[in-house]
Length: 157
Image (cartoon, rainbow, N blue to C red; front, side, top):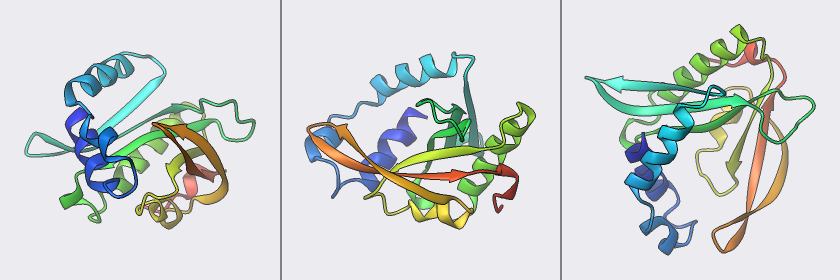
């Protein structure tokens, strides 16, 4: 998972995020962070595999910022660049929302960098643009768009 996370960030944000930040991303450091998160009881994850190799993943759980309307949140969604646009992201979101529904979570949101060229994916699966927040990141303030679903059973797959 940490390899996919680092590779996807470096591929997606090369012209967006300061190069120094991207080049300093460490698979080993992120591996420890994922290990800690995966051992949390409030953290849900699903992976997409091909021949036993992880090629994408999604993580989520309860909404982390105290939103009164949206109770679930997609924390991360990454698919290797050469395997994107093949339906893996949609399948991963569907797996997460089905799990959410079993937990009684029927609304969710996702936060995505405004400069992420793939953010339109969330509109494609019926996400509604809610607002833009300005978030400190590295040495800059980045715009983060928030998309939401009031009824996760309406997500297209």
